[in-house]
Length: 243
Image (cartoon, rainbow, N blue to C red):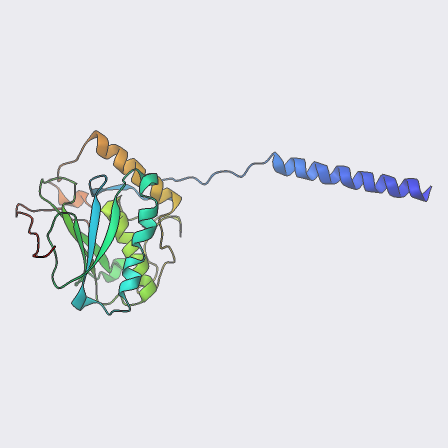
């Protein structure tokens, strides 16, 4: 009798366990949404042309040698997803430069006064278009001298590269859902140093749109997000000696 009772208890336990497993298997994990303004940034204005190999330089007098590895650490995460985004834009670190460059497909990282206390804004992109449209011919990422924390430099660079690929800021987005979120505290990293799945999806959308049309520079400069003022330049591209 005891043996039969024990056997019945074991069988009931096994049946109950199978039932739990079946219930769990029938409840798939819901995919995370990418709603603009909640988990994803809106598409912005500036973009490098698809397939561009951007030559990245750091202005040597502006940064300490130990800061430079943190600045360039954000290049590879964007390079790794260039096929997924459809941009096929690659950022190639070329070394230091004594001056801001205006050569074709050149991106200069330098320091300058851009700090906005109300928005905790300490970096921005300054892009130039020779054809008065959204395609970048050359650009600079400007880092305010107040930004010195190495990991904050890394995260800010990753954020600005997002602006290089058509993304706007998203200060209302959920924390860590996008690189384009606002830094909560100045000079403190936001611990997002690589594009999220929502960032990848939005860059892909930006480059799909770019295949359809290339937008001209808007007459109303307020249409461009903070830190992305369009700068149309009729000056011929200057290639520095030895480049």
